[in-house]
Every structure is written in C-alpha cells, then in structure tokens.
Image (cartoon, rainbow, N blue to C red; front, side):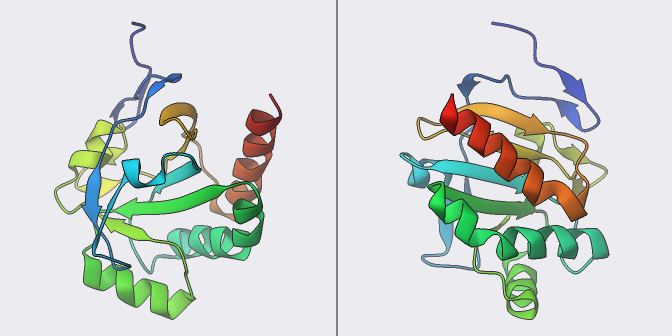
Length: 160
C-alpha cells in the first residue's frame, strides 16, 4: 500500500482506498450519522474550524446554495468540526443549513483524515464514492469558490 501523503494536520488517508469510517453525533435526524449510512451515494465530507466564523460561514452558505446541484449528482454533504451539537444546531438555524453537521469533539475523526491541528479541524474536503472509496481530497480550500470546485470534480468523477 502506498505511503499516505502528508499535509498540515497529519498523514492524509490514501486515495482510491476505503475512506476512514466514522459515526458522530449530529444536530439532525436520529442524533448520529455514520459514513456507512450513505453507501450508494457520493459523499462530500468537509472539515472546518469553527461554527459562526467568517470563512466557515461562507463555505457552508455556498454548499447550501448549491444543494440542488449536489442532489442532482446523488451527493450528500457532511460538515465536521470539533464544535458540539448545540453549536451546530444554532449555526444551522442561523444560516438556514439543511445538511448535517457532525460533532467531532475529541478530534478523532479529524485526525483519521489528517485534518486536525491544535484542537481544531482544518479546512479540508474529501469526496467519497458510492462504494465508500476516497477519491479526491482538497487541502487548499478557498471558501468563496470551494463548492464550485467540488461540483466540477464530482462531474469529472461521475463522467469517468
């Protein structure tokens, strides 16, 4: 197996291999979400530093704005940070977010994805295919244009 690439935040999970599994508390539905819940769909897992900060708010707003485009592509958005479920619920209510935010309080899932530094999740995004295989990572995320970049990459993957 190839050695995982390094990035700020730690070793990255290997592309074209099964994505690290997780189950985390969330502010929506039954209170917990697992990656495995979305087998058969594409999944965009995006890690972000903190609810209610300017970059994180812009990134979340853009994902929400583009939600119909993700649904057309059979894709679920999952946001993950170390904020608690109460903060996520308030953030979703404040910004009108209709996709789940997951609470990684201890940072274990963020660490598994090489997206954790000094007590916070880093701004990294991963595209996981319907079989649970990690296909793409984005490590240099610019919130204002990131959703458009993810959609373009999804189009390329789904046409391949």
